Length: 206
Ligand code: TYD
Image (cartoon, rainbow, N blue to C red; front, side, top):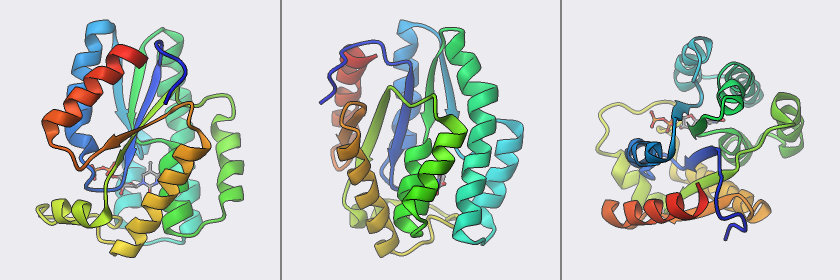
């Protein structure tokens, strides 16, 4: 559980595909706006260049290390041009994914060396970490069932269950490594129950 009770300014949403984070993030941001200005952004993306690179990252096959470096390249642009300027103006920033996704997907899922990812992280945002990370966690099979309703699946969503199992485990390991900023959300719960949990988090941590 988080030690810090209020004041989180940079908040990230994470979880495997199909965990439901995108459904909840809009509601979370609308509710958080009662406390002041909030910027909602996402990765890969968040800048015009980043959104173009997102298209490539989600659709073009590439070497896992190319994928990792492109994720961090879009992140550098995002951090410098969007996230830091907003935080400096006292605006809260909520990002749909950030570096934990690179450790989970490229590190856990694709097997890219974690030390190399740490070097990229240090290079790109050595001086900035999220204050609060909400990890939407659920068994892979339930996430897969939810994804099966989607008409089109991107390059990541088309991966097999064992890929997502590795991604999930890497996320859980990150949450144990950084317990001061991670909060686990049980994403098997109904949308209403998840909202209740998010409401409580806004009251206590934001
Ligand atoms: P996602 O955030 O799930 O968007 P949508 O809800 O529109 O599908 O999709 C982004 C995908 O990018 C997701 O499958 C995870 C992947 N990803 C990485 O592999 N590494 C990263 O560093 C980031 C930010 C995302």
